Length: 118
Image (tube, rainbow, N blue to C red; front, side):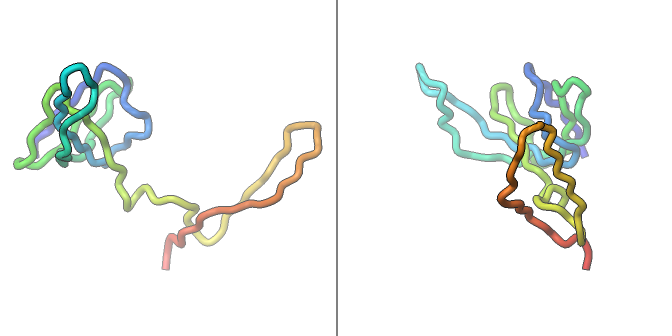
């Protein structure tokens, strides 16, 4: 599979991880406007490596996909099998500490819990 290196002028969002899916949309702007007139979203590939300075990424893509062009809007999607929300497992230990010397009242605690095994 081919690998493309995408380089950016500004650091990429720090939540980007290996295995995230890269997508892009061609951008064409109207005169005197910064509004995108494109509504096509293209899947590109999977993030294979991220530079230490977050200015470039390597993306593995399959042959029918074409790399984005200069000026296209590039985004990424998290891997839903790896990045689920909530605490995983059967239990969690939580410690609350009041580092202030003033009295504090705790009214409620909530969490989303997902069982991680059968």
